[in-house]
Length: 79
Image: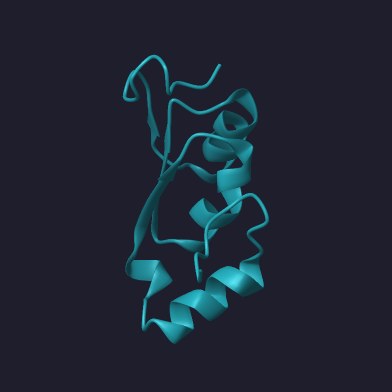
């Protein structure tokens, strides 16, 4: 399994994954809801926090990332 995204995601693992697969992270979009997603979001050109947990909402505001509210189904939504 060669997944790049997960709770143990490091910037170097993400960059290596992108290079191996010819991905341009600056041209890529990603979304996340938890603080663990901040690393991924900080490395793409088009990040978005969806129904973010409080910690991710703070990070998103500090970087000026879009924040979507009421996007995820209630069972998936983060407090």
